[in-house]
Every structure is written in structure tokens, then in C-alpha cells.
Amino acid sequence: MKANPKVSIIIPNYNHAQFLEERIESVLNQTYQDFEIILLDDSSTDNSLEILSRYESHPKVSHFEVNQQNSGSVFKQWVKGIKLAKGEYIWIAESDDVAHLHFLEKMIVIAEPKENVGLIFCKSKVIDEFGNKTGSFLQPPHDKTEFAIHGEELVSTYIIRKLSILNASSVLYKSEALRAVDYTKLSEFTNVGDMFTYSIIGLTNTNYFLDEFLNFHRLHGKNTTTINSINNKIIKDRIDLIQFLIPKFETEIGRKNILNFYFRQILKSLDDSMFKINIKTLDLLLEFNYFNFRTYFKIKLLVLFYTLGRGTIPYFVRETYKRMFNKLLV
Image 1 (cartoon, rainbow, N blue to C red):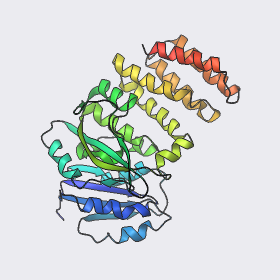
Image 2 (cartoon, rainbow, N blue to C red):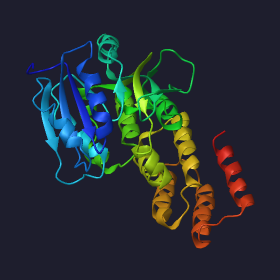
Image 3 (cartoon, rainbow, N blue to C red):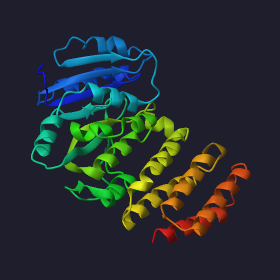
Image 4 (cartoon, rainbow, N blue to C red):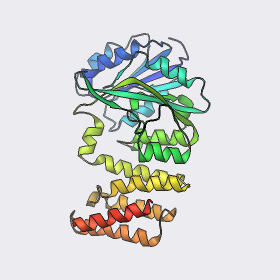
């Protein structure tokens, strides 16, 4: 293996033994071969280590790191892998997904001539737990075949309001851009650390879209996003992301897109456990002039009313607030 490979491929695993061999083989068999592989395991309780150990001595594997205790967040594993990576580009290949064999070759061809590139992303086809194609696919929520995301207006539109990068495995990062992300903040997320990363990179670099299906995203009952959507942890992380981004947006479009994203979360997050984070978010929005004190007071009253009402809110109150939110976004 070269001392300085072009690409570092990080495979962070937790309890995905049944998918590991297919994932790793789809990486090893890439048509573009200038890469190292960093295998990470977050204290799996299935037979993941047995499978990973088979690849430990493979010439493409530069690191095989196993946590003795589970870290609680895949994004802590991201950070661990990024610090070990030597490549000019970094691909975080989630352990339950699969790659098209031309993924790296085609992504590198697009990335190399670009200026100020932060990341390149492609479309994904969906597969089930057995590897069967479901017929579903993941692509940006518009019909543009080529586009770039740069600056707060486009970041807020195509990452915050409408998430265009729909699967982390579909992304190839320029390592310099990825290393500029705040590792401490990234490690705090259980969810949406990917959105955080895309956003921060897009504010100072350019994120490019390749209009090809080069990634296979596996949907199954053990997906982190699926689990955390059910227990609402994902809502807390989304609001935490909003708090971090509020001071970074100054344009009218950027600020409205932040508000739009927050207003979509707030009616899902009005319970006792979310009271403090909602109040803190409202305080920040007022401090940075996203709305006036009258609006701040009305929304704060909604949060208080819902909390004191032990999680119940009349239908007409909910609809009244929805109308108010819509007026603010016109």
C-alpha cells in the first residue's frame, strides 16, 4: 500500500455483521484502486469482529480499530477515522450499504478538475436487508442533472430545507474540507451529523452533484435513522443543529429556510423533555433578529401551553400557529 493513497475509505461498523462482507467486497473490488481502508468497530455484540478480522491483514487495510465500549454515536467514529486518514479524499462507507464498482473512479473524475471542491455526491438506489433492489431510489428533490451547493442561500435551501444529500455513503469528501469541520460539535450528534458536515463544508467550499446511481443504500429495521425517528431523538438533534447554524445565516432566503426547518420540527417536539431546547432556540432566533419580540412571545406561549397541558393541544391552536408560521415564511 502506498504511503499516501489518493483516497481513504472509512468503514465504521456497529452490529452489521450480516452486511459486512458485501460492503467490504464492494470496496475492495472498485475499478479505482489507489486507496486505503480504515476498519472501525464500535464494540459490536454480534459476530462483526469475526468477519472484520478476516480483512485485518489485507494489503489495502491500513487500520483496524475496535472500541472496548460503544461510543454512542457513529459520528465519533467518523472523527476517529478522519484523524487516521492519509488520503487527499475521504469516503465514509457506511457498513450496511454497498457501492457500485465504478463509484470511486467516476467520483474522482468529477472531483479532480473542480475548484474549491468540498464534496461530491451521487444518487442512490435502495436495497433491502437481503440485497434485493426495492425499486426505490434517493436523489435530490428537484430535476437538475448537475448543480453545485455553495454559500448560505444554497446550503440553507438544498441541505437544511430540502436535504439533497440523502445518504452518507454516496459522498466523497476532499479531506482538507472535511478536516475543517468542528470535530467536537460533530461528535455531539447522534443523528444529523451528516447534515451538519454537509452544511459547514458548503458554507466555505462547493458541494457538487454527480447525476448517476453509484451507491446502494440499505433500508432495514436496524438503521440508526429509522430507530431514532421512532424515539424522536432525531428531532432533538435537528433542533441542536438549528441552534448552531442560526448565527451563520444573514441573507433573507437563508434565514427563512432556517425558520422553515425549525417550524417543521417545533410541533413535533413540544413535550417536557424538549422544553429547554425549544426555549433556547427561540431566544437565539430573537437575539439574531429572525423575528420580532411579539412573534417570539407567541411561540414561547405555545411551548409553555403545551408543556403545562401535559402534551395536549387543541386542533384549532395547532392550525392557528401553522398559519402564523406560513405568514412568517412568505
